[in-house]
Image (cartoon, rainbow, N blue to C red; front, side, top):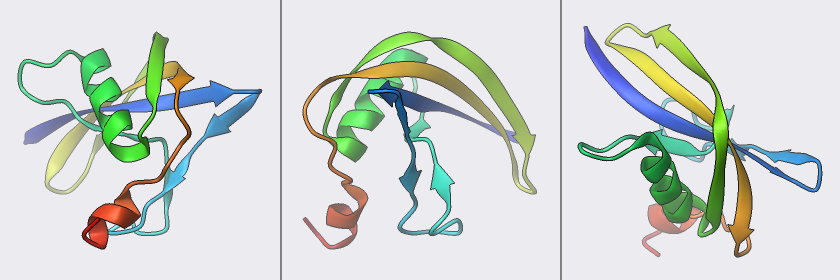
Length: 103
């Protein structure tokens, strides 16, 4: 079975945790922690920093690994590493909407 390795950020600021709502795809309107696939040669931490910059236009500081979630979907096995992060700089902007509308 194909394995997909992804990372997710549990971002904490001012005693609040950030979750985003999917705007497209099979799980549209579902809630998730931001993150994405790890590219070849990339560390999980670097992948997450890249994904968060792409998705939310903010910089983050890595804290520590919370745990790993594994799940078997019909077509693949998901391996998701979840990390605690804090916002380093910038203001959160949800970029999926701009990508879907050509911005």
